Amino acid sequence: MSNHKVHQGRPAGFWAEAVILLVFVFLSGLACLLFPVPAAAHPPVQSSPPDVASYTITVTLDAEAKRLTARETITYLNTTATPIPNLVFHLYLNAFRDQNSLFLREGGPMHRGHGWDPNHPGWIRVTDLRLADGTVLTLAEIEDGTLARADLPVPVAPGERVEIELEFQAQLPRIFARTGYADDYFMVGQWFPKLGVWEDGGWNAHPFHANAEFYANFGTYDVAITLPDSYITGGTGLPVSTVDHDDGTQTVRYRAEGVIDFAWTASTRFREAPRIVDGIELLYLYLPEHEWTVERVLDAAEAAVTCYGRWYGPYPYARLTVVDAPDDGQGAGGMEYPTLVTAGPMSMLGLGSGLIRAEMERSLELVVVHEVGHQWWQSMVAFNEAEEPWLDEGFTDYSTLRVMEKVYGADTSLLDAGQWEMGYLQIHRMQYLLSPRLPMYGPAWEFGMMEYGVATYSKPVLSLTTLERTLGEERMMAIMQTFFQRYQFDHPTTEDFRAVAEEVSGQDLAWFFDGLVYGDGVLNYAVTDVSEHSVTVVRQNSPNSQLIVPTEVLVIFADGSSLLEAWSGAESEMTFTYADRPPVRSAQVDPEQKVVVDLCWADNGMTRRFQISPWLSLVVRLLYNLQNGLLVMGGL
Image 1 (cartoon, rainbow, N blue to C red):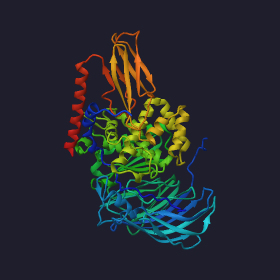
Image 2 (cartoon, rainbow, N blue to C red):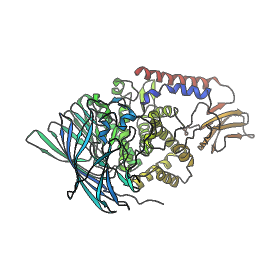
Image 3 (cartoon, helix red, strand yellow):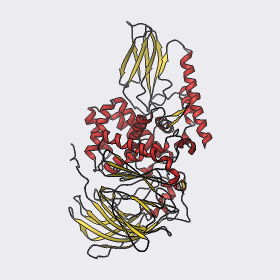
Image 4 (tube, one colour):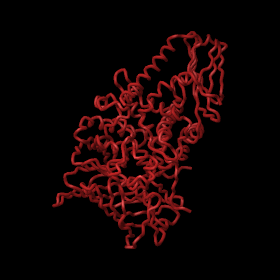
């Protein structure tokens, strides 16, 4: 049996910017009018992070050559019932050494709109590997060189620890896919040899795919960084000491306990902007040309930390660092690491820096709120991002949506430029409508470029929002809080979330998990007939799809009275009769638009007598959205 997991999927790249989707808002609204859809036992609570994989690293940065030289000691505890016969390491930087890597073959030399520079590649090379007793180990690259394996002379027994010492060199690439340099700016992520996760009798360690992110055990990191003394640094955890040397260098030591990774940054031009929120130090490392972002970034980070702490559980670390990205190194922006996230004034609408600086376009805040959200889901709950990316990105972006709407308004959470408004939920609905039958569940490498965006961002946000509006906000928050607190520091799965959601809600949530998470279910609720004393509603599904979401039907009578009917949605067609009531004037299924996965809202209502004002209202809305789309396309 192979002792590391490797999956080869069809070529994939990262999800396209949401901007290219905006033009579909008008087309999708028109299409749904003209072409209706065809019918058819609790685990123990982790009170503190387990110390499984701990790293002590001393690293020197050659700022001119953009190269790292380091010594590393890893202490690994076998917490399983199976002896461990070998070691498998991630060597992530080898994804950027040449075009033969799996990462570049799948995604091509572009990542989030930023290119890989073949003249300034990245790589990592282990120059010595041995056990603490001096036993030399032989390390062999496997797959595309982003993984390497070394056999042990004696397996590590259950409950025992193994200590490994190694030396390595790493060449940083020009900034690409979250890591590298731009002049005197360094964002150093995925930079050191890192063990996989031993589980189920083998190493869970996938080669570095273009869409895939990361999975690691919790531990303590003690990292000493030597670099020129003109540099200001930031890193995971807290700085514990700084020693100046006679040769113009300094050694800054960071320590972080109970984390799954370590990343650091350095620049001669960083400025520091701190803020204390509920006893937590928020530290913004920004570049002078982006001084205008300081208050906005800190305000967004404060809102995020406050909301997530109240909704899910308190932030347990002393500091959260937000790192700016330079204009010529935006590929480093928008990424999460334990206690450290990267931002940068990037625009997801492509409308130019003028709107962002004028606070009309809130991509800056959105990125900060989203990356801070990862502190709860990626860094503390620590999903397997490679195998179940919908959990990490979906939970984080659902949480992001809630904060953005709470702080900036539902209709203006992304764009508020006078008559031009756009909410973040609108972006997700537009993207979802491009591929609504795509299941959310699946490993990252099985999704294509656009599919990944739908499956791990947009569809989860719409599905979780539908779940919240169906169950009620209070019950949904009880589910999320219970899940977070029960599985903090514990690597839960989709089925763990299902068990908590059904336990706390007291309901069978097959419609959500079987229909939306694992399945390809879609639906469109519509009112098809309003007569004097009856209303007929339908649930339209695509062939072989039976997604059913509980909803409501609002009936308004001629005398102005109304009745809200609960409808399970189980029937493909349902007629409500009112023989003893005044004549029916109008009806609307899902009047509060709780079912945000509904493919078309335009057919949700019907009036018995033709009235011109609703149709004019519909036309105005469609034209308004078309104008928004054209404005964005003009910005491109």
